[in-house]
Length: 160
Image 1 (cartoon, one colour):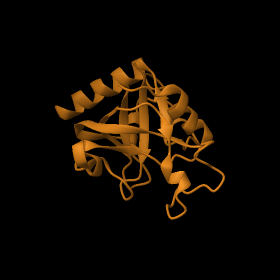
Image 2 (cartoon, helix red, strand yellow; image 1 turned 135 degrees about the horizontal axis):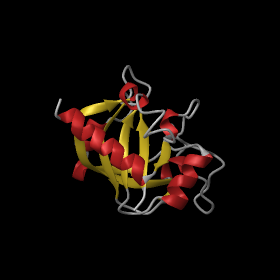
Image 3 (cartoon, helix red, strand yellow; image 1 turned 90 degrees about the vertical axis):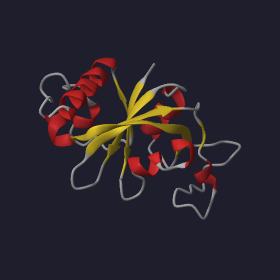
Image 4 (cartoon, helix red, strand yellow; image 1 turned 180 degrees about the vertical axis):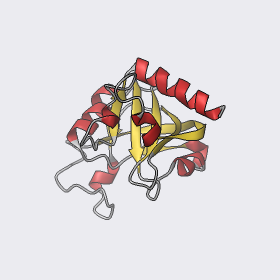
């Protein structure tokens, strides 16, 4: 199993939006960065887990966990000229962009803020891509040690 962190601006699509989606599931579309696309296309597998991270907001934080419920497939929004994620150079016969389907698994009792995560930047989360300066990827891998540490941190914070 692989672990991931998926970023979304809550004003665009929030963890609550996912929870209230039909079947608590939707496609993760609109990724327009080649490295993030490669993670989706080449690394994500059905059954993988991901943190849902709210970015570009007053208090960025991990809100909860989602499950990847499909293999990667072409992002159809790239072919739709009326969609904000349209890419004229991406064609159905030769897609440039990919997406997966994600399903709501569970919310953290209390969101785990970026500020809280940074407290462990020099220790347990030293290699966490999210904490690296200038990292703006909307999809990034999380190793099992980081995943387990963050899960434990969220559990401890829910008992506060």
